[in-house]
Amino acid sequence: MQQIISFLFKNKYALLFLLLELTAIVFTIQSHSYHQSKFVNSANAITGGIYNQINNFKELVFLKEDNKRLSEENVHLKNLLELRKRQLVIRDSSLIDTVNYYQKYNYTSAKVINNNFRKNNNYLTINKGKAEGIQTDLGVINTKGIIGITKSVANHYATVLSILNVNSRINVKLLKSDHFGSLNWDNKDYNTVQLLDLPIQANIKIGDTVITGGRSTIFPEGIPVGTIKNFQTKNNNYEFINITLFNDMSSIGFVEVVTNFHKTEIENLEEKTSNE
Amino acid sequence: MNRETINTALLFVGLILLQIIVLNNINFLGYINPFLYILFIFVYPIKKIDSTLLFLSFFLGLIIDFFADTGGVNAAATLFIAFIRIPVLKSVIGKREIDYNSLSLKRLPFYKTISYVSILTVIHHFILFSLEYFKWDNFYLILTKTFLTSIFTIILVLISFTFISRKK
Image (cartoon, rainbow over all chains, first blue to last red; front, side, top):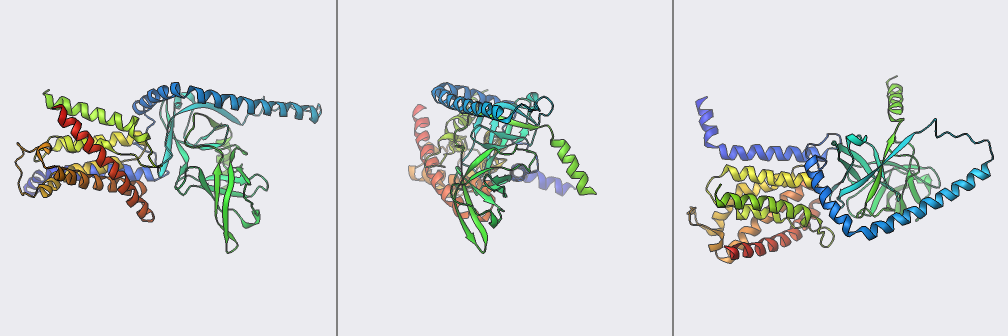
């Protein structure tokens, strides 16, 4: 016993080093696994607060660009509204207003205060958290398309697992033919993602539009993702399919967090079915 | 609180702020962000065995990790170079024992400073990128990133050295 104590005492410097190094490596491994909630993240009050300050300054500098983006968005929404008016007229009077009885999704607007897109596993930080009703595993989108899924949530901030993340898998489909696949990223180019598991029957062409599928409970169906950039077939299978994103992932300002009110219902049902 | 402690504390906070506000957003040539914050390890007074430096370097890296959402990669890499700093310095100087009271990087010949800084920087960046990618498939990517980023970090560290030594 005494020998052990004297050994520990003699090597305390090396032991301290080993202890701290092990802690750091545990944090690293934690960050590489998708399912564990992380201890080291930028959603806490201190890092979130500092990023907020930095972002406030940046906003002031880029005010002109933001205004331009907002006016573009306005035009887009106005056009959608006009389209809707026409459809209402065409459709005849037997229209049932389902909005009051059947609201499936709720959108919360948030601001991106920190954005990573050059790393292996990219995260964004947004300025809404538990206090505003944000939970983990909610979809994050903007007008141009999908951004990611919320991960760690603190009181007033949350981190978002970007689609530019090797752990990210999102259910998507083709606009023209309803063939499903999943979205993945090979961490090469931040404007290009990969489409996996698409059946050969889909018969894709360059320029086809990809949207989110309705299979996941995270994203609503039909959120735009991108267009097919190039692809290659091998042994009657798609070897790879590259997709150019609609979003410029390097410049994201305001986003919307999507809450699906039917999520628990769907998940309970699926769990019940698989148990039977 | 003596002068040295205050200087160290200021350097600690200053380097973190500089790293997260400016240097993490440079993205030169697409992905090169210099890690100037390891200047702390080089400037910290040289003592024989110093547990404080181990703690400080661990927390320095961990705070950077908190901001960059990278788990513990910066903490692991920074702690490692803090641990091997004295053995590396000994081998660079070429003496088995060093006189800790009189030794200072400012008095070393310039080429020895360069090799001391370069060795530690390359080791730091290699550990950092290996842990960040965590896969052997990306070995070439890790090597190129280590090489390119090291050049920039080393240049920035050496420039900072001249500023610091001129002031005193």
